[in-house]
Amino acid sequence: MNLVLDAGALIGIDRDDRRVAGLIELGRRAGAPLVTAAPVVAQVWRNGGRQARLARRLPMIDVRGAGLREARAAGELLAATGTSDVVDALLALVVVPGDHVLTSDPADIRTLLDGREIPAIVVTA
Image (cartoon, rainbow, N blue to C red):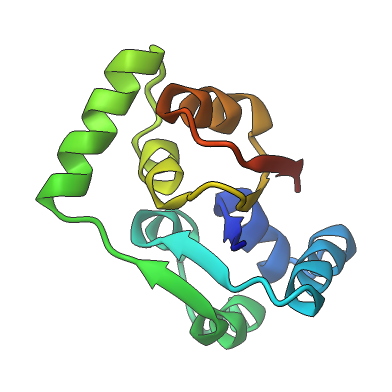
């Protein structure tokens, strides 16, 4: 099981949100690796000097890239689910069965995961 972090979770880290920190700590205690997609980092990253908390945590997160294959798969997933958030679709592609997804957008993530028929637990950040 991985703990997959969306933009809301990374923003929570950056803002020292206690709920997000607590959920991440529970995941880490359970031995869950932290995972996200590179476009999610791009969505939240603005200034490393001002995002010290996030900068310190990023090395602990497995940030997965997105190439042509993932881009096409994300587009197909968006078409299949009738959604439009490319970053959420790319994040949904890194989720594997049994993962927990920490998100500020549970409805859209659930729709995308259902479109992939991936059994995962969606937790609101």
